[in-house]
Length: 419
RNA sequence: GUGGGUGUAGCUCAGUUGGUUAGAGUGCCUGGUUGUGGCCCAGGAGGUCGAGGGUUCGAGUCCCUUCACUCACCCCA
Image (cartoon, rainbow, N blue to C red):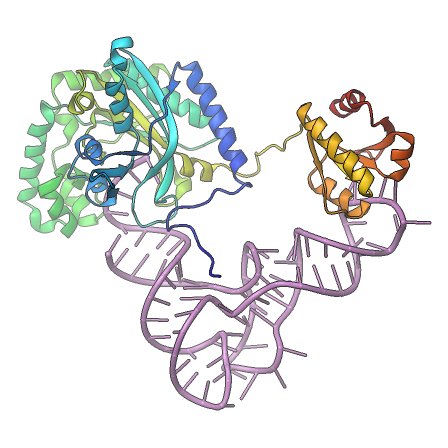
């Protein structure tokens, strides 16, 4: 029979790697708890309309990357390409703002985008997502980024670069957009094919183009920071000011724009050299109009998404500490001893001790080898001799010492093992 | 969607100008002790050489097609 493989861009995370994921998740939860961020769990499938309206029809994500299908109920559904829209949808749907105008939420889970896979990019990938809703104060922006840098630092990441920019608001961005479009229209011939297309769809993205000629052209273009309105300007200044107060190093990247339409004012990105071409570990920003756009009240918001897979790939394998909890292997010789071992093994597990045994009737030597491989702290040896006198040999695998223990007395055994 | 690279044992990889039975290391199993792990030694299992077609007396090796993986563009986390 031919093997069935996983779907392209969808991968298995094998037992060797899962402890790393668990450790990161544990740390993340701990830090979020201290910052008062609560978990929300949202569905993987949403109505397609949610993302069209939330992320923007003209974005690459919606235009060509979503897993969208017609459900049997004749309704278009989409596997979520990001979490923010869903979190906001839930926030509105359950009237969470009536209960508490301020909400700090996180969610962790898989996202789906049908892109060509490469290093740090999968079709199913995982994000750690945080949304702060109902607070417009620039100190919130600073706090959010500060926490993020702290979190990544705690996880052991080094040489992170926090880049920030302001994208303006509904009032000042359209005017700026026109300015840029006008400027570039005059120089259209110097732009690459993609950028000429962007000129009509999303001209601000041209700032991100890596093509040299485009960069040269755009270098003379107006920059959004020079055009944002007074309020946006003040907001941005306060953000940088409070980042400094918290000693969070950041650089202003006047050309950074983001690929999702909902961002307003503060936009940021954290990059690292360690990831290859897909160098963004985290991206985020403010989205003051999104809640309303999705049918909710006028509530402002800011959030970010950490690329979980990318984060994991940056963590060295070396700093993974091995589990030192007590761990016993029960080596049994003969049918009767095996029966005995079966009972003891399961009793120990219920008493909170990790216990393993072998059912294949292997030689003692082979069972010892297995105990060693599983890095067991102890091995309990039960054979005919032990059945006869009601004791078993308990071997300490570190120093090789052995002592007899009463196999009827599980309590005494547990005591020795847990030391 | 576009371009480059790579497909040989569970894993990491050798394999010469095309030549007989395709190798190594590691992992796995067994033995070296009648009931004792790590180190060492010996043996064993494990491969449709990604798939399909072609050239040839003969293909892992050359050619074509295709698929997968991978890196980059694009875009993003």
